[in-house]
Length: 465
Image 1 (spheres, rainbow, N blue to C red):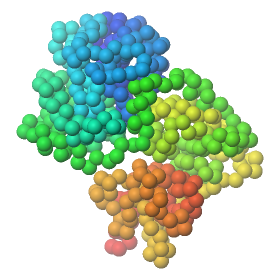
Image 2: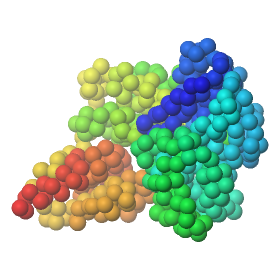
Image 3: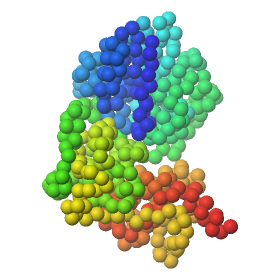
Image 4: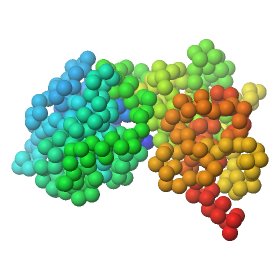
């Protein structure tokens, strides 16, 4: 028996490949499915099953393309209604895979159809549990993703999650290995660990949501406390996973078209395309195509695209480092952005854009030392802290106001385009995203502070010592 966790850091997502005696299964595959096919071919195994733990909200699954390519059967738990062919399993149903078996445990709470998959070894002993978004390492799934107009509240779903954990998961042997669908960085939970697997016994001892003496009411209160609204793209990704989508090959073929400056500019104007610059933030602030939006590939790229670009059908043109074009289009497709129309063919920096006489814009950027030489009060400037409320509560500049990047599109109406704003976050990545968006909306008096809050506070302390 082989179990391989295939972890994708950008999405903080774990897919799983299981193989036994020439038969294989994949759990929660990403949309770029070819690596699962390659793994099966390397092991001379036939891919029989594609198990989905639920209708994922934070990425588009690869189940449809993978089933088409291999003939494997798509399996969901009870209550999963789709517009495509799949097997809706019953609670407790078992699927034989070589000499091992996989048992369905229906665990509603994160979503109504959420199910975990219990892997039993050759002797029938419970070996591992693939928990999807029901149980994470250090946390449990958020209970506020019910279907619109369903009449089901987050408190009702939290109660279901409490019941599922205690009736289906906690009674399992303590040595069962827990393999979740996500780790730290995902928006599907609040307190996820950076560890990507653990034993059930260890989680019973350390996970706040599995306390033996926890009442149902206490669980509901703790799980729902401090929940931020889900990112805008979550509902659309869940819909695509339920109703279907086009092939990733189509998205790649359309997006991987090299364009010269004339073609790029023509398509941008004709299609009202958003220019998405995915280069390093240091390169972006030095010079970028006017009105382009920065979301760098070297950060949590796909989740931030999903959070900041509200329309999955938005036409997109890419400014991407040479050699990373396919990576960019693939990672956009993972969260449902299939309408990339091409990329600017670059040699280095922004040539040939600049060599054709076209203008660049810049984002004024300073470090902590330079910030200490500025007098924001005299400038009548405002410092915007783009971090999440939890980060803000852990320490912030006394003169800053908190405007989390996740909700900048909504909070922008409270800002004044004639005001001077200093922007900062944890590393400069989010502040550069915010600066690019604000610039594209007519805000010109922007100063991007690249250093961390700790660096700024340390500089302040040194100045006053």
